[in-house]
Length: 386
Image (cartoon, rainbow, N blue to C red; front, top):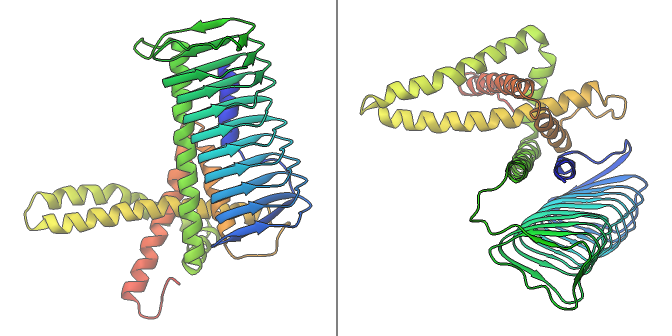
């Protein structure tokens, strides 16, 4: 079960397969009412799909509504996700609220505040607060939540950990075993049947076993990685979308300067990363320097945020230039480059040591370039970074 949960959580971080793709975005709202021939990548304040899709759907928005069948997988990061039609593949989502009434041919792997699943799926993995699974499943079901409700026909084993309440509805049928943890033992209705037996492991007052502790650690790490990657993609995409000129200058200097000059930018950024905290502490030793130290500290935090955001932009621009140059003739940096770069860097950062080093080096280069452009803008008239 631990291995399956690991695969499900990692699936939330990985892009959907397929080489061909259709990209679309809108700052207000986007409605896809005509079918596309390949994978669809959609973004906006809201995304609505009303046309059948023959491949995968990837969407990031405040609200995502799927009102047409999808022949592939669905990968979503959203405030609210609504799926009312069948999905042939898997559903992977990190959302605030999920309402899934369409049947899913593959697995459902979801991290959500509230999840209501009334459609049937193959296997179900849900981490959240209020969770209702009432459509059944043909495979195993794993649920971690506060308030959990179960109903329907389940062909496999079920494991539930509920920190507040666990309820089994009338007519529920579990062909496998039911193993659960909750503050109180569940009252199984007379019409509910569990063929493999029910095992109550107790309440959260007990110390978890090593296996359960590994599951909790894995779930926490998965949530952290997803939130970090999503936040990074949003910040990088907004920077490129709002300030395309600055993004173009930074990526241009990073990619066209040559290894020696890029190394000098990296050394400058590395020096700033190390020297600025020391200088801030020295200024704090005097009453007069406290105000300057406060301003310097704010600027330092801003530089760190921008450096790591533009590190993803540089990575995405480098991938487009060297890996996807045959697929596009567009040489301008776009929000898609930024999102792709941040995603790749977050996947690489899972590798111990090497991933963090690559991300830090790109951030140092970005910091050196940002400070250089700021200096030119402030002290050299007419030489602006935009």
